[in-house]
Length: 271
Image 1 (cartoon, helix red, strand yellow):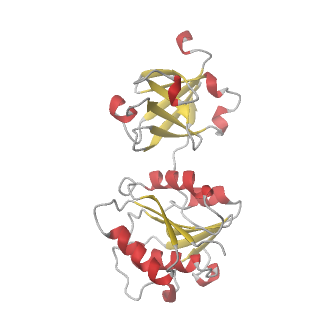
Image 2 (spheres, helix red, strand yellow):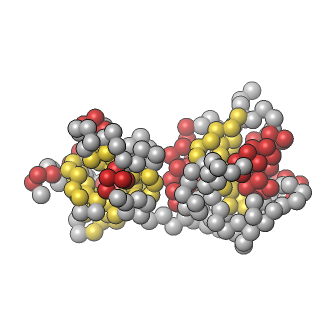
Image 3 (cartoon, one colour):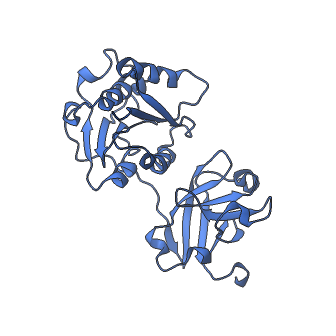
């Protein structure tokens, strides 16, 4: 029998008891569940960062995994709670766009349902903690095999996340930093398969940020000297700015939203 796996991705942090409360609700319903914490350190209310982290993570899990995402600046408001099924995975969270990029990457067709079945949620629902009282029990029941049509009515107008895409401007590719990892690596929204890179050899890209030219894209952190800044396509396939054995974020003094420019030149010193 396959393991029942529920992943958790939140902006709850590690100081408070919020994550424990969510897990406690799930454990009452699925005592043998296996939890995997993707992260609880998403920048507060940053649904773009959460979507990026989910997109990098979900595909490494077995089919049937339930991904519970609670980054929910609209909790208690008009946004819908939803469950989504795509490509053999199930996703649970708010209808604010955070689930949809990963769901669309998982399969060509997605089935989204608004969570309206009161039998699947807690009897008393806090207006400020749907992660515990709505999303957690629904995720647990989906992990047990609850049919999607039991969740509630189908939703055909899910909120699409407005993620800024890389653009071509004057012959240069302009990207944005969307995530800063614990090493201080600045991860951008430019994926190695993005159409804007069509016809450009990755090794021939030169990258700059905040007017600081980093030179050509390299293949690994060890391709530069200790303490050197570099650009590479990381393990998720996205362009990132890094510092060998250090923090690029601290060195350059930028974070999420910073502008990154890439140009298809043959050598950095030819510019």
